[in-house]
Structures are given as C-alpha cells and as structure tokens.
Picture 1 (tube, rainbow, N blue to C red):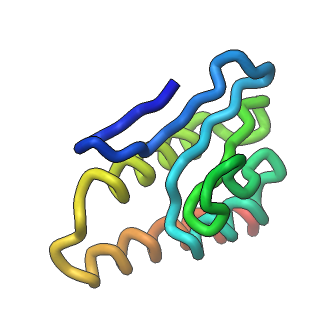
Picture 2: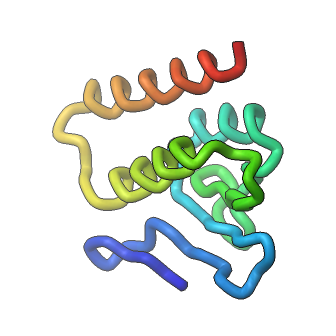
Length: 103
C-alpha cells in the first residue's frame, strides 16, 4: 500500500508481510541514528538506502517513535522548509531524542 502527499510517496507498507513492514523517507543522518538505535530499523528495502528506512513492526520500536518517523517522512515529502535553519532544527531535535533514548 502506497501513501502519497502532493503526488510524492512518503510511506510504503507491505501489508501482506508478517510482521508488518513500512518504508519511510528519512533525513540521511537521522536514518543512521535510527538504524543504530533499533535493530528493526534497516536501510530501505528496494529503496534509496540513504534516504529511506524499512521499519519492521514487531513491537521492538515504541509506537510513539514509529509515529514520529511517519510524521517526519510526511513532512520531508510534503513541504520544502522555507529556511535551512528550520530543517536543521527539526533534525537536531530528532537526533537529541535518539541520543536521549540510547543513554
């Protein structure tokens, strides 16, 4: 199942897979941190592995983090930041959350 905004894909769900898997667009630096923090987050299956993650929904990633990844993917695709600082701030906040989780 493909989810798009403005004609661009932000999520791809393998609904026939068990456990469920979802491909989500992600900032490249944040993608690396998420992959290090969660074994269920891997480089995007059949996607550009720099910009996409595949998240296996197996209970190992907290629901609020999955929702945050979906929100980030949607936001990356749906709007172009008006200011470079907006993007840097968004990325910085997410990286701080991941680092906080790992400590």
